[in-house]
Length: 76
Image (cartoon, rainbow, N blue to C red; front, side, top):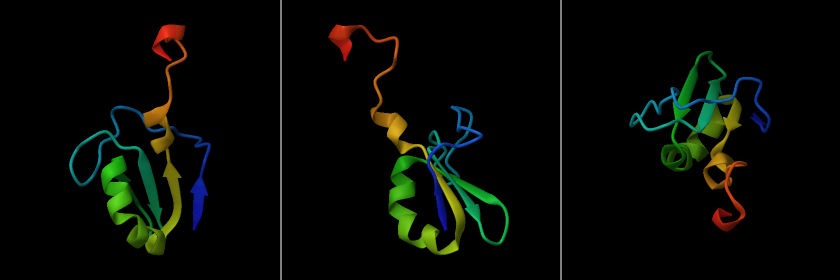
C-alpha cells in the first residue's frame, strides 16, 4: 500500500464521503479496482481495514488544520 502525500488530483468540496455524504478528505484506490471516498471521521474509523485492501490512500486530512493563506495575522 502507498500513501499519497501530494496528490495529482486533489479532492474538492464536490467529493463526498461514500459513508455519510460529508466532504471527503481521503481517497482509497482499491487493489481490486475502483475507489472509495471518506470524510476524516470515517477514514479514521475504517483505516485499519482499508489499509488491507488499498493499493494507495490519498490522505488530505491535513487540510482541516491549515490556516488559509488569505487570513490576517490576527486570525492565525
